[in-house]
Amino acid sequence: MSSLFSPVSAAATAHIRRWVLDAFPRNQNGVEYDTPLGDPGWFGPGSVTWRIHSEFPGMLAGGLCALMLQLLHPRALAGVYDHSNFREDLVGRLRRTTSFVAGTSYAPAAEVEKLIAKVRRIHAQVVGTLPDGRTYAADDPQLLTWVHVTEAYGFLEGCRRYCREVPAAIADRYYDEYRRVAEALGARDVPASEAQVREYFQSQQSQLSMDARSREVLEVLSDVRLPVPLPGVSRDVFLAAGAALLPDWAVQLLGRSRGQQLQSVVAARVLRSVAPLFRIALNDGISTRACKRVGQEPAVLSAWPEPA
Image (cartoon, rainbow, N blue to C red):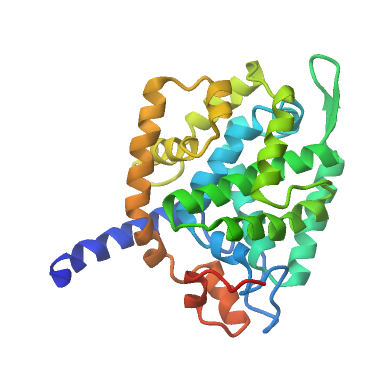
């Protein structure tokens, strides 16, 4: 029976591979992933981070979830709103963010340090004033923590919802590991467990709102067209799947309609069903290269690591 379906699976994985490589071309950021041999980078093959970040559907949906959460924080949003060309090149911004996450996750240590230093230099130049007179700076430790926590939450929940079960102890270990990047960028008091993340989100809600700037950014995000076949359908599925990961309080703040919530339910089921095909289609990606650099079989990432 399986041989009957293998041509279909092969065609599907080929289409998925082409879609991903068109949307996020490889080797665009100049990061060296293959040498020096034996260098585990900041996390290594024994980490939870390498496993969660190897799951493309969870990472893309989770990243979009994070963007929706980030636009609810007026000061965090301001740096993007005032200092970037997101209206004209949102795809480029998504690609740069993807490259940074991939690089800090899987590159050798020296490459990670260069990426961190580059982003810190950029952040130091991003300052301004909100329409209500409040000032903001991209290197504000509190804002860096918000951006990091929303991303880590999205990536974890994307993996958990669409790719594989994530036990509570593994989730805590992920938050504890991955905060290293945020702290290197200047974040402080970064949550290190699921319980701490829940408490953190609760503490931040009084600062959040859906204002005119938020709506504009959400509209641009909702209209983004990746350079792939069926760009509108692809966008709608991943955006709705990203929205399915949102906490209930964020769904309410964003004002998502009943119809939009039903779309998220359908998109979540679709993405969950095709996630295994992404794993097959992308079996030579950055996580695979990182494993080979340290002399590990990529299959090691298919199981959670032993307790530390």
